[in-house]
Amino acid sequence: MIKKYFFLLSTLLVLSFTQQANAQWEQIYKLPATQCIFLAPNGNLIASDFQFDYSGGIYYSEDKGTTWNRADVEDFAYNTIIQAGEYIIASGECSTLARSKDNGKTWELLNYAYFMQEYIGDKGAEADLSYAITYYKDKLFLADFNGGGVIYSEDFGETWVMTDRESLMYESEYGLVIDSFYKLDTSNDNLLLFGAYFVYRLNEENYTWELLRNDSNFMGVTAHIDNKLVCGRSIMNYTDAVPFLEYTTDGGSTWGELPRPEGMIDNNVRAMHSFDNNLIVGLQMGGIYYTDNLGEAWSDISEGIPYYVSPADGSYVYEIPMVITSDDEYIYMAIYDEPWSEGTLSGIYRYKKSNLPVAGINATLNDNFGIYCDNNNLYLNNAADVTIYNINGTLVLSQPNSSEVNISNLQKGIYIYQAQINNAVVSGKFIKQ
Image (tube, rainbow, N blue to C red; front, side, top):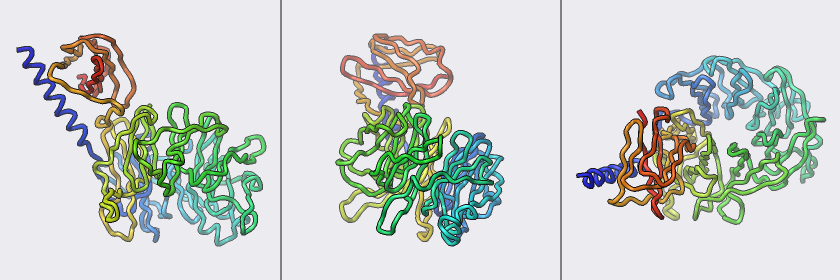
């Protein structure tokens, strides 16, 4: 009777793995040209619609994306949303910033064109925009895209100060110019600036910029994990001769590489997000990849993302991920489609964290293994080395060579276990009530 019981449990585990393998992204909101998704401090979701005729706007949801409202704010094709102190700030075209103090429901407009006119002229300032904006040491930093330089504000965008422009200039066929900037981010208490060609570090004593690298090659996508600032390049580059992801831990002085997914040569990273020890990378047209061990093993989690089959080679060409974020339950992603396509693929997608695979585990099931759990213990019919992780991939319990593991101290929720018996590893999930 006992042998039959454990055989049935093994069958149930197989069904569990099948369900996990079929886990999908789901579209929860259609927005014609979705550019951003942002999680407010109170849990509100905020999204922007990047329409070229400024008819898009900012939208917010107070219930994890079930219902959405359009915010009452004039649209300027907002491309980046960040948190800056008590404000949420959206950066748009025409040198415009929108800022909100109530988690995205209402906004006020600010404009920095007046400050840039001296450097890039009236027309340049009127059309200026910024993808690179961050809040660092009580200052709002903004690097413009059209050669104006980097400015900062100590009053959340009402007044501005220019950092040193001369240290950003380089010789080109048009004379001395300044790079187009894609990202501002921090590493080891330093502010780094990423352009199409160069990477700089801010000298906070005199607000000059130190050149770190001249091979940025559109290194404009970043995430923080394990004390590393991980960087990807948002440009077509299909080769394994250049790094897939690079990282720094010392403010950009030295750099290392993370392993790439096996057999994959696509380096065109468009979106990246981390939480705990988990890293999610969205390729420009190549799908979504996930690792919970810093790239030692990757899982393709693209299922549910719209795609078409390339007539050239039969490969899948996925819609473009713009921004990825997450709360305690879901991962959210903004998927972009050109506004003139008038399709329904663009919008906000989400993926349950509890459905993330355990990367790098070769799950081997056999009829001689069975497992059962009640609210206090995890029972195995063979002694094994057992490790248990929460749904975010954080190790919460480890017990070697045991057939009974006490789980009474775990909080309620979904957990992932791994049981190693000799060279076989079995993994699955259980719920602590």
